[in-house]
Every structure is written in C-alpha cells, then in structure tokens.
Amino acid sequence: MAKQSMRIEYGKYLAGLGAKNKDIIVLEADLKESTQSMQFQNVYPERYIEVGIAEQNMVGIAAGLSLSGKIPIAHSFATFISMRACEQVRTTIAYTKMNVKFLVTHGGISTGTAGTTHHAIEDIAIMRAIPNMTVLVPGDVREMKQAVDAALAHKGPVYIRLGAGDAEDVYGEKDRFAIGRATLLRKGNDASIITTGTMAYEGVTASDILKSKYGLNVRVLQMASVKPLDVKAVLKAAIETGNIVTVEEHNILGGLGGAVCEVVAETAKAKVKRIGIQDCFSDIGSAACLMKEEGLTVENVVKSVRDLVRS
Image: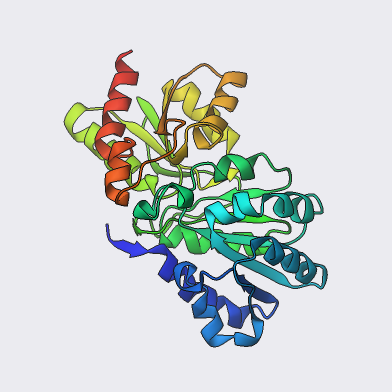
C-alpha cells in the first residue's frame, strides 16, 4: 500500500475536470491552499469565486449558480460547512434540491493541533439528518476520484468529506464506487468490519491480522456512501456473520455506526460494536496521537472483533 494526500490529488483532479465540464464553478471560503481548490483557480480563474470568510454567503451564491444551470462546488473545512453554514445548506440547498456539491476537507480529528474548534466530529450526523442530502466519505485517492465523478453525475446536493492527512491506498483497480453501494474489500463470514473514510485502511489491515494470527475470516465493507447507506450489504453482513464492528473518524452517535445500528435493530439480529469518538470533544494534539487516544487503530479494531466473536 502507498500513502497519498487526498487533498492534493483532489486539487489536481478538480483542475482536470474543469476541461471536461465547462459548467463547473468552484467556490472557496479563504482556504484555497488547505482545500487545494487553488489548483482549479490557477487554470480557470474566470470560473473561480473567492468569497472570503463568509461560508453562508458562499452557499447562497452556489444556489444562484445552480439555478442558472451551473454545477457549483463549494469548498471549506468540514466544521464550517456543516455548522457555520448549516441553515443555508439545509434550507437554501437541500430543501430546494439544488444541484450543489460541497467538498469539505479536514474532516474528523485530522486537523490535530488546530484544536477542537476545527475538529469535525459531528458533520456526518448533521448532514445525514438533512433530507435530500447525499453524504460521501471516500477512503483513498482512487475512491475519491470515483466519488467526485459520481457526485457530479448525481442531480442534487452532495456532501463529500476528505481528511487533512495522507491516505493509504486500499481500493483495487477493479473496485468501483457507486452512490448507495458498499465496496467489499475482504471476504469472510466470522465477523464484519464496516468502515468509512480513511478508516478503510485500519479495517483491511485488521482483517489480514485476524486471519493470519487468529484464523478468523473477517469481511470488510467500505461504506463511502454513508447516505444513502447500502442497506442490503449491512443486512447480509448481519445475517451471515452475526458480528459487526463499525469504524469511523466521527462521533459514534449519528454517523456510520448509528446508521448501521438503525438497520440492524429494525431488521436483523447481530451484535454491533461501534469504534469512533465516544461522544466527547476531542483533545488537542497531533492527529496521530488523537487517533490513538480515540482507539482508531488497527490494534483496537483487532481486539474489538475478537471480543465480539468471543462474547
């Protein structure tokens, strides 16, 4: 596996998309170097709008562009779109089903020392709860590119969440992302690990360790499409394995784990363990330290699966 910056690769990919689709208009709220939207600006300055630190206004401008037939892609950190501009996203964009895409970076606790104000641990829950909103959290560069393509082809609002750091490659050449469908990264019937975002790496690595050291065949589903969720894949995992561990860089409430539990509770019997931030504000520190502190590690995924299978 190799590590790549999804943000930098996204910026390159976005600039390439500008030549293919003349309707794309990029909007930015004073974070172009962080989100890498500047790569589009460098090539297409006439289709680039810098609004400054004014996320609510940016969302309103995006709505107007959508009404004129353009495909606006609004950029910022995950915290600022999901919370500072929440009302505008909900009422101006989602309620009216505007064809606006949100590309947010620095999701989860990946901003590390930037502090709790910049940690997005609630954004997936907020966006999931907004009707008409599609929520995508890709796990590596290959999946990110396919998710962006799918979002542009989709008519309606889409929220795409990236982290700040590098991501390990986990997606195979034959893997194909689709909205509303999970990607099977490992086969197995002893338990299931369901991941979203860059936690896919922890999932597949844990599955490999569980097989080599403990003889357990553990299925790994990468659920980049958190909404709509692949309900069939979750039910199949619940029925065929009986044990599910969800892993997400987000509060355990309202995110991937919550979505999986809703499906399992209503329709199938299975034990579910949710790995994520335990409904508390994250500390300030390096991203690596915070991930370890919150149990977002391969070791914790391995232990959680073993505990669940034994219980």
